[in-house]
Length: 454
Image (cartoon, rainbow, N blue to C red):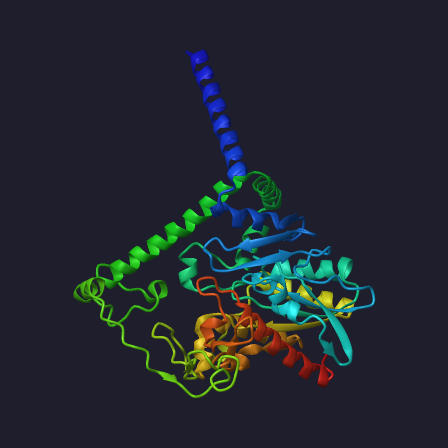
């Protein structure tokens, strides 16, 4: 009996191994398009012993987002920085430090705002920009990346722009409901587990070299997100129908007054016809009289500011400074480390708040405030108390409405609205968004240089 069980287990083990090898060979041979984005993204990265994930020096991949939201070329220079010309020994360097927003997900190398800062002259000094950003970084990753740049890679690093991300230490409840947590919170959990780095390195290495294991990892992650999203949607349906009690801390914006079964049935089975959009101003624009688009259909100019969408909640004013939560300890420790490293090396650290969430853009465009920007207020308060200079780009949001956007041949494509600057369903900056950010940063940096603050 025991021998029979033993032979059975060996056969099952052999069958499992054969299936795994067959799957691995099939994936390598056919390279399914659904996995292509994740494979290239994985191979763009390397394991790093301190901050876990860096970029592969010399890597060159053309990425197409798995849902078709964007595409672009990602080239990593010999220092491990994306889309950056390696500086000569005598060139001063301007560093851009952050997560995927800074790294430039959504566009090709030449369109990232950090690359657009390359060659900027500040106070008579020309700077070569270097993109230190890595996707999925939190505050600890920023600190490690900065130390490495100062001590090993960029001896002429003069100024570093640190971009605080909404994902660093706070996230909306709806994202937490999908199983997503802030990067700093994830790092805190990792720090509490002394065996984490060893396990992560093994997992990272195996999924980097095995198509089958990587496909299983991606599928598991996607299923977890979809399950959480499905649970959230099911709860929302039950709350809207009046079966479950409305809880604002979980359900967000439902009221009217918590709807009810009759209203729920009406909304579920009846959709009123859409009204035509007549809220446009047909004033002449650059392509309508003698311009490059003069023979084309006139392009409508939007009314600015565009109204706040119905589902976006704005406040009349930002919260009082004293009411803001203190930063999480792990975030504060990382900030202290960056400040100390910059001071030690004589590097100017400048903290930048780059508004990218649609709620913030719509509210600010209408002279109001969105709670989604609270993360920046909290970080800004801390850095100003440490005498670190900050740049808040919200003042440039009005320029997102009504600006001419051009075709590749220089003709007028359309007049912009805030939706043209953020990739919908993704949250990263478009080409226009990166251009807007670069121009705003240039103006702010030149003002600082003129005031001898750089």
